[in-house]
Image 1 (cartoon, rainbow, N blue to C red):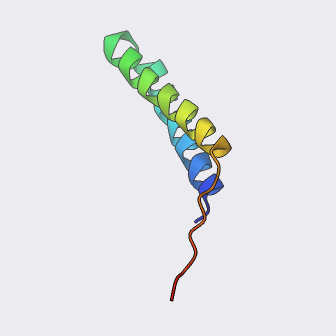
Image 2: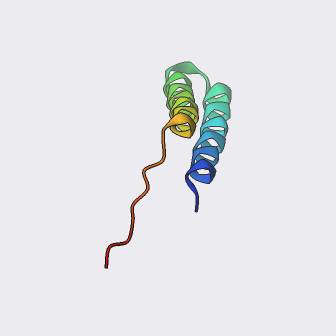
Length: 58
């Protein structure tokens, strides 16, 4: 799996968790919403991170 695919999966899960938090409401909902928004932000930031390439040494 490539790095950008992983970032999109993290963003997608963040959207789902954020929607759940939105519909739960109250203090629990605010915590769940914040957790989801953090995943969206971290997934987006991960897309801009440079890739580290490792070479196989034999």
